[in-house]
Amino acid sequence: MNEKFSILSNCTSGGCGAKIGPGELSFLLGSMPKPSAPELVVGFDSGDDAAVYMIDGERAIVSTVDFFSPMINDARAFGRIAAANAMSDVWAMGGRALFALNLLCFPEAMDRAAAGEILAGGADKIAEAGAVVAGGHSIYDHEPKYGLAVTGIVETKRLRRNNTPAAGHKVILTKPLGVGIVMAAARGGAASPEAVQAAVASMERLNKYAAEHAEGFDVSACTDVTGFGLLVHSLEMVSDKFGMLIYADALPVIEEAVSYADEFILTAAGQRNRNHAGAMIDVDMLPFATQELMFDPQTSGGLLIAVATDEADALLRAIRTDDPLAAVIGEITGRSGTPIIFK
Image (cartoon, rainbow, N blue to C red; front, side, top):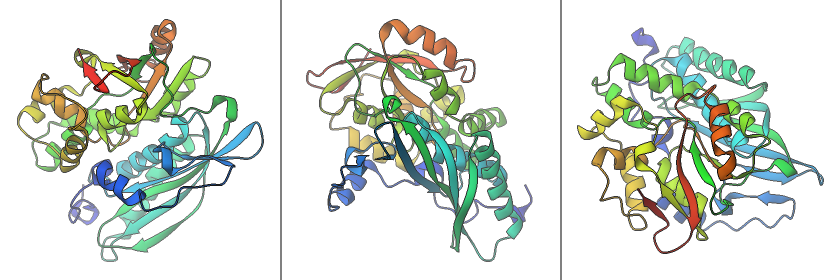
C-alpha cells in the first residue's frame, strides 16, 4: 500500500489486542455503581457482550460499542474488520443489527483518503449485515482508531446470555484461533501472505451467519471470542456455576499461527490474558503453542456456542456452510474444582 496510507506507522497496538486486560477492566468497573433500572436486563455488571434494555414484554434493544487501532495497513480492510467486530456482540446476544454510528479518530497530518477508505470499509460490512449507517463522531488523534456504536433488537424469547450454559451441552467455536499471533508476525515481517490472507478473511467474516444458523437450536449460552481470548471468554461462560472440558486437539486454528507461537511471536494482550486466567486454569500439560493460541486475543473472532448434545452435529454442519473451520471444541460440565480442564 502507498506510504501515504500507512495507518500502522504510529500505532503501538492494534485490533482487540489493544483492549485493557480482563483483570484491569474488572478493577475499573469495580468502582462503578451497578445499574438498577428494571428495564436493563443485561448491563456491564455481568460481563456480557452487549447491553439489553426491555422495550416491552416481547422485544428489547441491544446496544454495544467497539473500536480500536489498526492491525493491518490496508485501510479499507481495517474498516471492514472493525465493523464486523463491533456488530458481532448483537449477534452473540441473539439479536439483529439495525443501525450503527461511526466512531473515528484520525491523525490530522495523515492523508484524508485513508480515513475515507476506513469508513467505506465499515459501510461495506454494515450493508452486508442489513443495517444502516446513521451518523457518527470523529476527532483528531495521534493514532487512527475506528469502530461503531451499534443498536440492534432482539425478541426476548431469543435472547442469549454468555453465562447461562447447561451442563452436558456441547461447545462449538465457529472461527479458527490465531489471528492475533498472525498479525503480530505480519507486523514484524515474519508472516506468510497465505497466513495473513487467512487471518484477514476470518476477521472480515460476519458472525451474523453463524448466529442465524443457531436459530431454532437448543442454545443455552453464546458469546463471541475477542480480545480476552478463548480461555477468558470460556471462564466468563462457565461463571462460578459450571465447568468446561476443552478438547485441545479439536481446536480450529490458523496452521501458521502454531509455528509462529512456537517461535515466540506473541502478543502483550495474550500475556495479560494468561496472567488473568493462570490462577484459575492449569495449562501446563498442553503444548506451548496450544496454550498461546487459547490466550491469543482474537480480533473479530468466532462465536462460542453451548448447544444441546443431540443437536450439536446438525448445528455444526449448518455453521460450516459459512465458517468451514468451525468445530465442536468441548462440553459444559458441572463445577468441581478447576473451572476448565482439557483432554
